Image (spheres, rainbow, N blue to C red):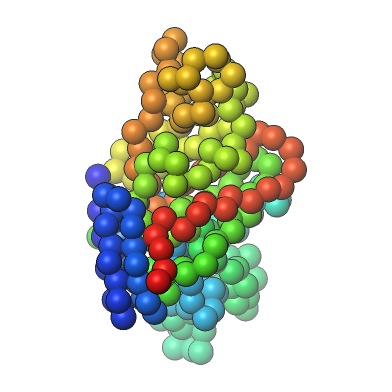
Length: 261
């Protein structure tokens, strides 16, 4: 299993993942993730910062090179166009470009990365090196309501607060904007990446079956005749797909799972 470790540096902070309660004043936090060698890791941001550009969110972490073919990459799904954008870290050129992130657009002169990553943004980290690399995502612990935009189709998202929650926990809140049905073919889905096994686990929102034990809960999309309720926990720093099959844009607005004094 991947290790997700959250560290919180604070003025006053009480944190309990078991009860999802945090009380804090001027808290600054960080999540440290390990990106497997020659592999992808699906991460997300759960902190605020003065700047949400890649040069601040990722900065001089990971490994760059003089070519996007060998540089580590940040890969972001554009939910509006339903396409990917890739960004690479320039290094080893001996120029002012070194140590910064650029759009992988094939242009001879690197184009600065213009992507903005906010709390709840999900994205891929592609480690092209032969060894695992640690990545630290940090910033201020959100002290107000966070809003995660969601479009029709696939969305890369993450829980916008640094708290571990099960997808069926009421505080997780994504059920409120998801469309459940009596079939995995038509219900909205969450799709979670397993970097160790390089596989996905998909769950669907069951509803309209007339059975209280099933309706309104996420279940594994495992082809079984009787749905199996999902027991998946989303950790701080972990991203996942939300596949919204309904039309039109909406927003995921989970309540803060902690209280500010």
